[in-house]
Length: 166
Image (cartoon, rainbow, N blue to C red; front, side):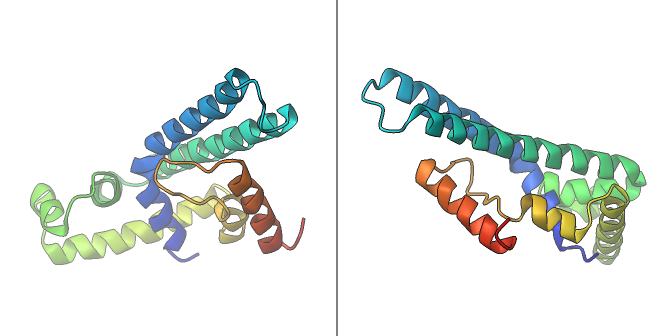
């Protein structure tokens, strides 16, 4: 497994709370907005399907957070702290070098080693490239703003096409 998924999961990790809040806000808007708007622009089952899809996305993002936490906790501290500083706290190489009292070259070397280790741990937990592609590839992260009904339908069609028309 290459480190692309490791870098991707670590990069979105600090944004997951905002994404989940965006999903909650969209569920609130969809559910109550249609309830209070008595001229129902969508059928009720369509609204329920939208809410279910949004909540399923939220579950996937929470699972990403748990996966990243478990992987970081499974690593030696000298590697996990480098990944946390780089991806979660978004520190520069100079800041990491200073805070860990190591050279910049050592930061790069440890970062590469840590990403490789993180990638191997993901696989040990059962998340191969194939599994990650199937579970998460069709979820588009657009800040904390989430799509409305027509975009969900487009996403579902796009995902089905990418997965071979399940």
